[in-house]
Image (tube, rainbow, N blue to C red; front, side, top):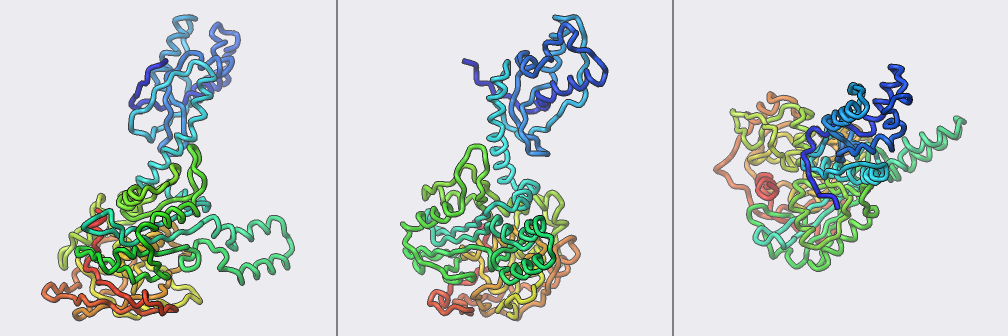
Length: 511
């Protein structure tokens, strides 16, 4: 039995199959009759070539994401030295050998390929290597990997959020989710249907009738997805704790779900409900193929911990996107421009945002430009509310944040998390959602004129807004429940209210 040896992947960058291919190309371009040489049998086939016993590892290329069986330059040198020692001829190093930059940084399992059967067996593990690397890339917020998931238009993105007790983190107070099945949205979209039928239909009349049918049934499918029409969503309140367990540092708002009806369930049934939602959206588990389900969350580590405590069965091939990490990676790569630090800036003293800082979900939405209203879209009932002065740690502009929607309601947070991800990935053509019910602002001191700002691309605009803000430190906001303005909803739950949070609260709970 061979020893299990781990090696550092640095320096392992030459694709083994390309070494053989490069030498065959070198012989051809230099008119070398390799088949007449004493060492020619070593190149008669790839099976003969690998008989040298090559030390190899499997890695994925950091640029392409493809998996490779790679060896080191010293191993190629040892092969050439063997030819010189045994046959007395010197071969140069062949040009055009495929070099890869390993994505993996941890130690890799060293294997020795001495026959084609071993190489074939190792080659069959490459899809699993690709999947393992893809999971790491997506979890680390790599912009290219996440953008490719969205651009493929065949994945289901499921955003989730838990609200749990500050005294006992194992006590879940609420759970909310929002999901979009991109494959269904795109397949039934006018763009996809027209592309399909245009390839088989050439008559103008048929295309006209087809376009008319698609227009009249535009709610069936649309790309990019319409949050109001294409997001599947839900909000569950744990009846054992509602109105009994109240968080003091980061108050929750269980009765102020803005995008549908809240459902009250026993705490023992919540894991069953979550498992059913995940099962209804996921594809079969696999060791080689990524799941069609992509889990999304903002600061998702705590949510994953809650799911682990509930003993929920998650597919091992499921990809996980943390919108906080993704946005941070975009900012570090320069894709979001220069921004002001909302926590470190004060009126008259603005500070630039550092590359390692993380935005709360509300600040992420505030930092994004609000989508332009579309023709025929229902108005937001809270759009005419006088906006409340922002608290400490918040961007002054409203941006893509939806008026009248309170954070720290798990249903709202999950919906807005998916909405924020869509705005980061494909902002063009997105329709802003209109909440079914909104919370009126609670009483406060005289509002401050803030205005709307575009996406921060420099410190000038935000600096001016921070300087214009007036912080009323001596005045306290009323902690009376905020009345709900119901839209197409008159249920009792829609008239219940909780406390208005001060600040964003995510930094204390989400890290």
